[in-house]
Each structure stands twice: as C-alpha cells, then as structure tokens.
Amino acid sequence: MEQDKSMPNEKEMGYVDHFAELRNRLLWTALIFVIFFAGGLYFVEDIRDFFLDDIDITLNLISPEEIIWIIFMIAFVVAFAATLPFLCIQLWLFVKPGLTKREQRVSLGYIPIVFVLFISGLAFGYYIFIQLILPFVLSLNDGMFDTMFTVENYFRFIFRVTLPFAIFFEVPVITMFLTSLGIVTPQFLSKTRKYGYFILIIIGTMISPPDFILQIVVAIPLIVLYEISIVLSRIVYRKKAEKHREFMENQ
Image 1 (cartoon, rainbow, N blue to C red):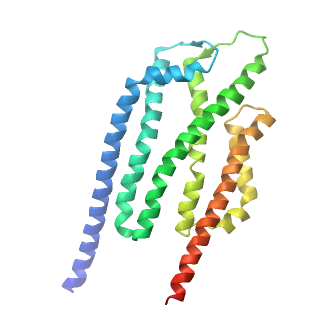
Image 2: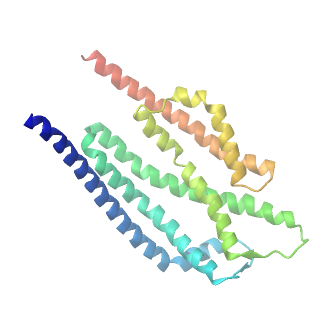
Image 3: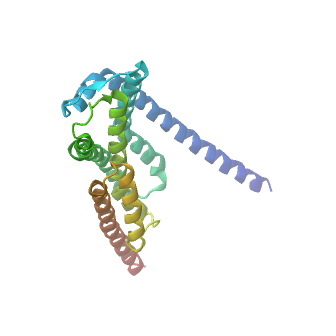
C-alpha cells in the first residue's frame, strides 16, 4: 500500500520537474528575445532604410504613435526571426531524453531548415510585395489622385504580406516532422489536396489586393509549397516504412 501511494507522488514530481525545466528553457528564450529586440531597436534606422530604398514614394507621419509602432514592430520581427533557432534548440533539448539517437540526430537537422525557411519566406513575401502588389496598387490610381502613404499603413501592408509567407514556408518541414511521428501520411495529404488548394487560394485573396490574377499569382507559391510537402512526406514515410520492415525481418 505504501508503495502504491508513493508512485503517484513520484509521477507528480516528475511532471513538476518537466514543467520546471520547460519554464526555465522558455525563460532563457525570452531573455535571448529581449537581447535581439534591443539589437533591433539599435539598428532600426538601418532596417527602416532598407525597406524604404526599394520604393519611390514619400511616407507621411500623421501621429507620434505611428513611429513608435514601426520601431517596435521592426524590432519584434528581427528578434523573433533571430530567436527562432534558439527556441527550436531549447525545445529539442527538452524532448531529447525521450528520443533515440537517430531521432535526436534527425530532429536536430530540422532546426537550421526552420530558420532558413522562415527567412526565405520573409524575403519571398517582400519580393512579391515590391514587384507585384505595390506596383498594382499604385497603378489603380492612374494619376487621378495625389498618392499619400502613411508610415503605419505602409509597414502594416508589408508585414501583412511577408509574415504569412514566412509562416507558410515552414509547412514542408512541419509536414516532414509530423510524418516522422506518424501523425500525417502522404496518402492523407494527397487525398485532401483539393481542400488544401481551396484554403490556400482563400489565403492568397486575404494577403493580396482584390485582383483575381494577382491573387492566383500569390496563391501559386503556396500551392507549390503544398506539393513539396507531399513529396517530402512520401520520402520520410518510405524511409520510415523501410526501417520498420528491416526491424521486423531481423526479429
């Protein structure tokens, strides 16, 4: 009886220890985020000038809150992108004891890919904004009115386009990870392809101006990412099936 009573207590202590470890790792991540946030504030003028070099329009400031919002938003995006690898490493260290040697090695390889895809998504979204969306929006005016962009509206427009692309560029690596866990299969992704396309087209209409052709152009990269996810899922699924078959043959 005493042994049965001690087992729930030991299990409860185990949960407490895990939550304490997770809290500490998240606190370290928050500290790194604050450091990079401060760095973003320090270099905010250089980052702002980078965004403004590619446009030939004058931005207007109509309230002091706008410039404060821009400074903090730029610093936040910089800090989030820079902290992402550290966050992934902390999460990997948290789950590492429950993984096999092979799983540790494979999952660790996902971390640089997550960072590279996030940055690639930001860059691609910015290219789409500068080369397609902004010229289209300006062409709608056709000289009828004087064009005036406020600082806040311009940068909100940028973040509205770039951040969704940064997130959606993570879909392939997330799909690979979920496939390795057995949560997602390539058969399921292929079966739900038409629903995925429909959702991606809706997302394309949300992050692009109200022009059908431009919405399709924006949705195409998202659809390509979905197809890449299916291919990568098949590769992971096939390797996982081969490992299982070899294990069963050796029994």
